[in-house]
Length: 299
Ligand SMILES: [Zn+2]
Ligand SMILES: [Zn+2]
Image (cartoon, rainbow, N blue to C red):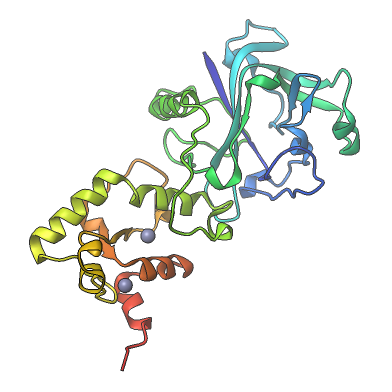
């Protein structure tokens, strides 16, 4: 199976610009002309995708015979850079046809006409297209590192050093529509919507096994779970019902790393629900020490 990564502007729905907006992702994306606004518009059972390549698309690198005009059976991974930084997977087509040159859409639908979209580079059956909701786009692709995505909008990921990343992406795609919406903390949707780094941070600190391990080790050491910021103890206030309850916060902001770093118990802090929410409302995220200083003492 061949795979290609195509970087486009950041949008919510890619189903026409009406009611949506396109934001330029990485700086290298400035020359893109916004033809991707209909990349997830259903049109007579098909979906027509656009990416702005540097020159032509090398279909040979996608398994097409020399001189062919198109490559078949390609997995196309769409990526975009939100304002908060990084490059996130926004969706994919499977079993797509990728063309070397620009093609005319055979019979553009109304959405296409309204958005003045008449050309495409990639086509797939609409059933094989999957767009991830903006607030769940938490798979970040490392850039400008060995094995990571480069400067071009079209990335073939066919170097040996990219193999591990590609395997992870394929696993992610095959796991399909993950329904695991983020529970509980930061339900203020504006905070996490379109912010894959924050979503990734929250997902990481909610790993159930890590949270359990952290709580156990703190309980074993101190005999109680107190908020490291304000010293609130759920058991002291709520009695039995509060025993063993606390939230766990990841101390490292995710902004310096894209993926793969292992979390240790020392990276986690026990916090109460109030402090935890407020910590995540502050940008940039404060350390526990910094946060303690802003808590007004009860006199
Ligand atoms: Zn607290
Ligand atoms: Zn947190």
